Length: 311
Image 1 (cartoon, rainbow, N blue to C red):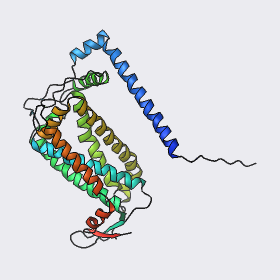
Image 2 (cartoon, rainbow, N blue to C red):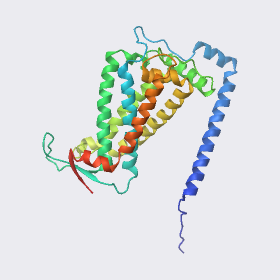
Image 3 (cartoon, rainbow, N blue to C red):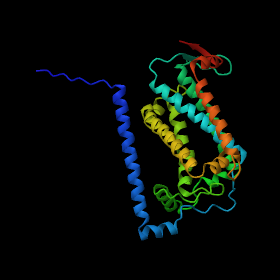
Image 4 (cartoon, rainbow, N blue to C red):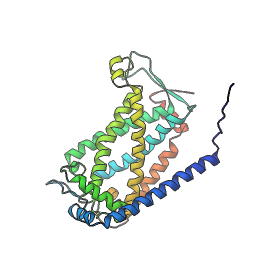
């Protein structure tokens, strides 16, 4: 006796219905978190904890205040590159029939014994953006150390952890921690920025390199010690982390004093003027233009400068 099973195809209506359920569940979960946090803040022990750990650790002696101009430029370039990297990476994973393929010219300064790898135009764009992002990151690390800005995002005392818990409880209860990012981040911000800069970013680079055509395929021992499956298993969650970080980061920037925060990030000043807002608005226009321009029609001639582009 044989049985057969059939699967119902996913329709757009079913997708929207599922999305509605997910969003509804997320809203209910957020409301529950807020109610629990508010209830906890009414407990005497929690109030004493918040008084002992207000959410901010003391900075090391000599830590700089304010944001230099180079950090504003780095912030913009990093935002632009991450936006395009996430988009092109998603296209690499989801596109079944790429619009074109790119093959590196085995002439000029870069020559190899092996035949150049043929890759999709989406992958070429993704790897090119990765190279620019890494270069931007190297400059960032050098300036971060040279100017002492590292002291603002690297934990230097153990009380950063209870202070981070305090800040998280204050955020969750919608009673924001005192914001003074011009001088010092709260401890939750410090841990988040540290994890993003010193953990997530290197993981993205290391796993991306393992998955790229530049990785030596003939190195059997190295490939066994670091299999490509392990890289894939880490690379996608790291991408999801960056997306979640951006969403939460932008939300809190807008919700905790948008004009002042945007002046910190883009205007290099600590006031409530509209300078940072308009620079931020201009950066959004540039990012939107880059998003629109990143299409095969414009990518093909650029890619052909370093290799052959075929269909």
